[in-house]
Every structure is written in C-alpha cells, then in structure tokens.
Length: 415
Image 1 (cartoon, rainbow, N blue to C red):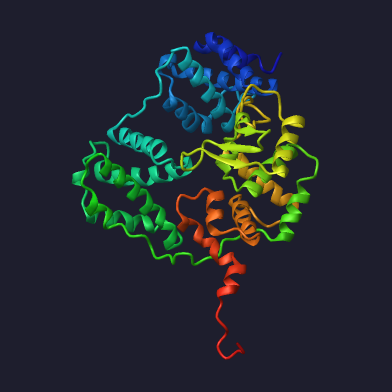
Image 2 (image 1 turned 90 degrees about the vertical axis):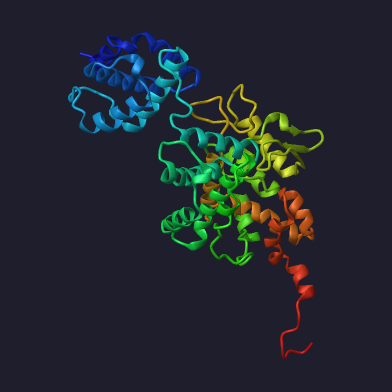
C-alpha cells in the first residue's frame, strides 16, 4: 500500500479538499520545487486530519488555530505513528502560512485584523509614521515598536491610550527596569531612542509630552570616542581575490560586494536596486529606497558595473521581477532582502579567510579609501549621503594626511 495513502485521504476527505488546487497553484507560481510542493501538501493533510478530529469548522481557521496546532498538538502528536506523517515544525509553519493566504484570497476566512486592541491600533499608526514620515529602516522600527509596546502595555494594558495620564516617574521606572536587560549602558540607548521617537510622534498629534521627553537621557557614551573599523589594503585585496572563485551565486555575491565596497551602499539599498535604476550609457545609478526617503544619483564605477553586468548576463535566473538581485530558490520571482545581502557579504569574508562579519564594514572602508585619496569630509558625506556633516566627523580621525599637518611637536622633542 502507498505509504502516503492515509495522509492523502486525510486531505481529500476534509474541508480543505476544495482548496487543494488553489494551494498547489500558489506554490507552482512561486516556482517551488515539486518535492517541496509534495511536502507542503503532506503538511496540510496532517493539519486537515487534526481539524477533523477536533471538529473545527474551516471558517474558524486563523493564526490562533495554527499556533494551537503547532504548540499544543504537535509536541504530543499520535496521528498514525507508523505512517509517513509530516511533523517538521518549520515545514508545517511555512505550509500553513500559504494555506491561510489561499483561504483569505478565496474569502473562506476573514482577513487578519489590523488592530484588535487600542494598543495594536496605536502601534500601527506609530509604525506608519516611522516608515512614511521619518523613513526609518524596518529593523529600527521593529526595535522601537517592541520598546513602546512594553511601555504602553505597562501603563494601559488593553485599555484606551491616554498620553496625558503618563507621568514622568513612570517613564523613569520603565527605563530603569529596561536598562537591566542590556549588557552595557550604551546599549540601553535604543530604549531612549524608541521612547523619544514615540513622544515626538505624539507631539505632532498635539499632545503635551515635553515633560516626558525631558526625563529621558542617553547613557554616557563619549561622542566620537571609538575609531571606525575598516579593511586594510591587504584585506581588500584578499576579498577581491576571493570574489573570483566559481561557485553557487558567486557572481551575485561579487556584484553585491562591489556595490557595498565601491559605492558604500547599505544592505537595504543593495537589495532594493532595480534594473531601471541603472543608466548604462551615462554610467549612473539611482538610489530610490534610501534611508532618508530621498532619490540620489551616483556614478557607477566601471568595476561595479562589470560585476553587475556579469551577474545579469550569466547567473541571474529568468524572472519577471525588475529587481537587480533576485532569489535563486523558491519563492522565486522575488527580490532578495537585506538579510541575504548581509549573508552574501559574510560568505565573501569567509571565502577570503577574513575574521569579519559586519556588512557595514565595507561602507566604512569606502569612506576611509576616499579620505586616503585626498577627498574632503564634505565629499565623503555627500557620497555616503549623510544628512548631517556631524555623522561623517567620526572619519576625521582616519584622515592621517590632514591630521599630520596640524599635529603639535611632542613635548621635549626637537621642533
């Protein structure tokens, strides 16, 4: 007997049977491998069997039901122990995410609620403000939202948010308790940044919050105390040599590293590059989704252009997506994300035998190379697209050419 007979029957005899074709079509459109499609069908067959046993109606399925299946049923699952039942939590979670999307597209279940409580609504509006008005990166917004969520929940739980009811002493106590979660005082500065950002947002809504902002002081951190780290010339040569190796996604990795090293692009800016952003005749590249929500046109260095062209011509998979860098694995036809950019750079470091992991190191390296080549701090700030020249001042300590000109003689030495 086919070992998958029972699990297939679970699905075909369940309430989900009518949605198998739509589920399969969604995965095929994402160009998932046939093996993955079969695996995910087995996953929802297991879920369908559990629904039948629990007598749950298909219209009640949502994220809460999915987590109930994963957290309560899966650890103690006894479904046909001798049969090939899919029990891998990661695969089940992914498959059920696709299932929820299919059921919502077919209007079988309700859309995911935007905000179930006043706190959820408040955080959604604050997140919109951070993204559309201030242009903060998703990771920064997520960090600030976690901090503000904890603060507001302590104050109001699931009740209405009344900013005038928040007292300065409550903010002091909250910060004191939060700072204990961080290993260094300077790390707790993110709590201050998150709360100040939220209170500035509330001030724009007409609330009086100056007395709350006033009690938030950043932990002591001497400005410009550290040196920005950068690659040495020897390390740069080793990194560039490593890019020449042939392997999976090697051309994409080379193009990504050149974008970061030659142009000083952030990981998110590399991920968001589009084919229409490159003017090959004029040798320029337009950055549209930048940290400051501005459009910037930059010259495209010859090395960077060759690396991108090499990737586009010989390695980029066929796709309708207009992003420069796209996924090689399912879901296909999608652009890569900033995390994959950082991963590619880490792999390039490892290939070169370098002990580094931070992708931002290449941005620092580009700034250092500009200073060594005689560029001014203003020119470096323009290339890095800093809003304020103060942000670029950290690199002044690397400008050994100009620092030597203003250095005073050592006391007691011959002048």
